[in-house]
Length: 126
Ligand SMILES: [Zn+2]
Ligand SMILES: [Zn+2]
View (tube, rainbow, N blue to C red):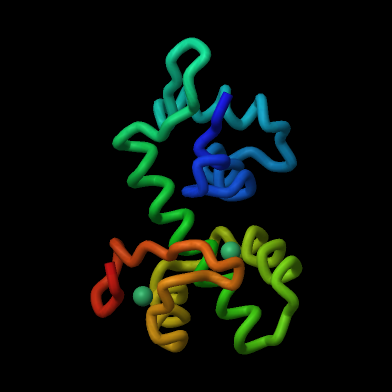
């Protein structure tokens, strides 16, 4: 069974952030995301993001990947630590994340080479 994570769009950590559960198991995350109508799956089919799920994912993915890239570039944290610390900074205001994004020059990719969507603020690439 293919998950959204395996399709390369969203990482397991980002899915956990969408579900709002701390230190969850993969099964719990998917169950929670289904309850929230952020993902769906047909029997034996892959897990897919719903329309609502895509919107929620883009914001989380944008924030997470900008923060980790900022921590890596300006504070020289290694990628793994930057990713981990970014997960702990979920609560910071969007305006801070937008400022980080501008400082970084609106990067297209995070430190892991994953796509960064800039749907949510002006000046960014889409
Ligand atoms: Zn990344
Ligand atoms: Zn941007």
